[in-house]
Length: 342
Image (cartoon, rainbow, N blue to C red; front, side, top):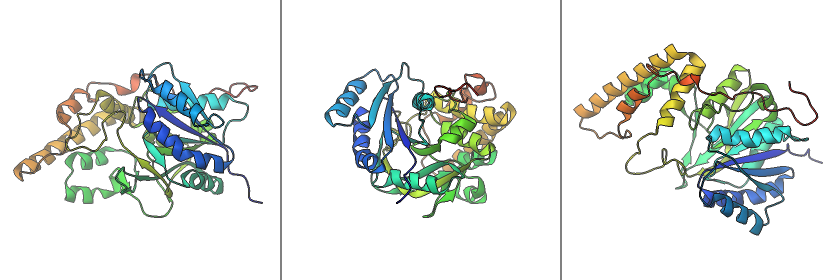
């Protein structure tokens, strides 16, 4: 008789994408029923539209009440906040799940995605965080995990020039992955499984991030605590990027980056490496971007950068903003019922 799979709570944070969440739930239904001990909680981040009504109706009419529940959050506190709402509540229960699977609302889980992740985590107890493979909406495979951000990665990203990218390939953030499970620095929050013991060790995600960089920060805290993060390519989801924000969606014309993207980036550097390092990383990126822009101008090549990128970057720079002074709730969750606080 095979050993039961670890218990899993799938966490989906919704903001004004209820129809996409329903599609995601449909893709999860056979996998949840096949798993044995798994459930889904949808946190609605105060969408202010008909999300709660649409999701409540879908759960009822589709007969998903036994494994899916809806948690309306009182405010839109961002991605980390929404996930923390579900994780902290589950950690307080009498029987917290062994694994948490953070899944974006604009995803569809391919067959076997949940089982692949849970079997891998069950067989590799030293792994604390695991991400899966991602397909784009057009069906193309997006084979990337990531390296931690640093000054040299900012030079490569700002310049966006082939020879420079090849020279700095060891520091390029996006890391093209192969077909085998591989240890990595961090994985996309669109599909990220976290072991309960990791939450007990490093706490919840930092709610000082509204959106972007929070999963990189969380994996960095895990890395510093000696915990491993892996990429598992054969657990696959389809991801329609940018449906809540429009920032990463594919279009002919890139969108202007919102203020919270720059604030999250500044927070990541200032919190983890200090304000001086954050300021130096800003200077490195801006100088590299200017050099790259000059090269494109001389070669008469069009720019694919978002509008006003340099001026927005300068406006939000750590040269005059201290991004790490806001609230940080990367703390241990509340103790389960019947237990005292640690």
